[in-house]
Image (cartoon, rainbow, N blue to C red; front, top):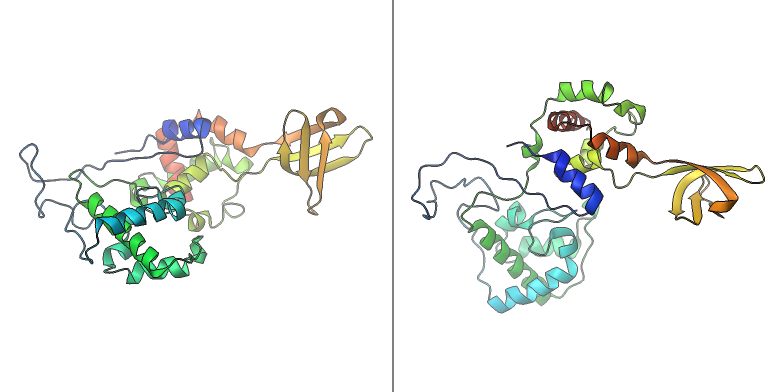
Amino acid sequence: MRLRSRNILLAAAVAAPVMLFTLSRMTAQAPQTPGQRPTPAQRPSWTVGSQGPLPEHAKFTPLQAESGGALFIQNCAFCHGKDAGGGETGPDLTRSKLVTGDKNGEAIGAVIRNGRLDKGMPRFSLSDTEILNLVAFIHTQQDASMSQSGNRRGVDESDLHTGNAEAGKKYFEGPGGCTQCHSATGDLAGIASKFSGLRLEMQMLYPRDAKTKATVKTKSGQTFAGTVEYEDEFTLGIRDSSGIYHSWPMTAITAKLDKPVEAHVTAMSKYTDDDIHNVLAYIQTLK
């Protein structure tokens, strides 16, 4: 099933920075009586976070899971989603192999205490009881997710490997006009090592960290150039290459702004779904 990327991400770009993205995959299964739960043999047991045998772990009380849920909302939900099913920057813990292999918090607890600084996860100073409650909540959420009768939820990186990289390269270097601003050996070198899956596709279609550049000329004839730090209808503020911040009333300057995001928004109306999948396939090779 192909992702309707253009329509979904265009809505996300216009409406809000947070996007809800779901996908279902058709899998071959033996015929079932309507309403009948799949048998273990019919479940895709290789999939974590969907059906398949539930992981073996310590038994937790409902109170532990409830207390852990409150802690999770406070400390973890921003990245991992309120139900541990994945957020904008954090992975889906209900499909985590580390969670699946954890028995009584020995693996999850170590990550909570030590963090994963290389991946942007900080350390948390929580008591042993609080950590155990978090473990209880995470395991409870994984059990609930794996007990669902539908196909797996979420989007794996492999789901997005549907395009033709060679066709994507031709579009990138030709009619797409991407090389007017980007270079596979310049700003995009190693991009697929920094981002993957939906994060990479969203970065391609609507880069949230793209900076607006400005060239400013004052009434006295001075010229300044830099990255826009502040802009409204009355004031423009930029930071130059030396790190010095400058600001002026709009009435005191003329300014030329280069907004790279606008080019991406314009391109969204021109992309076909094949264009998106092909260009993404090409960008996935830039590691």
